[in-house]
Length: 131
Image (cartoon, rainbow, N blue to C red; front, side, top):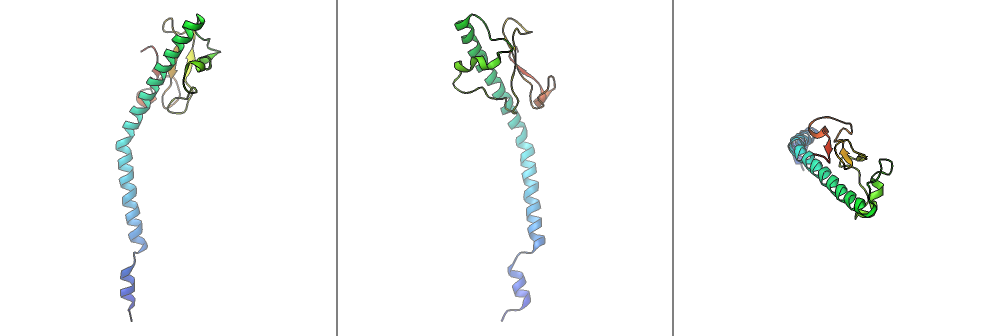
């Protein structure tokens, strides 16, 4: 016959479980903080790559039609020149398109960054076609 003390030792107490869960949560938070800058760099690189892809499709459109799409026509006009639908930026916001552009003879393509607003720095900074 087992005593109560022997039965209690075989299991894990609620406090022990809470301590383990808290430690796992802390490790997860630290890992996320260290990996977060890499995720942001990846999104910035993806936005630059997409803008370059749009610029190439715009050049092809210009060669075929003799003009760039107007601001009203937007990026939808170059859909036949791309292999996939026009995606939103890596933060889920639509790319801004302006023609005539303010920075030269070609259209302006802009990704407003994580905050989706003009201006900003770091991850909130604009990614543009003319730089």
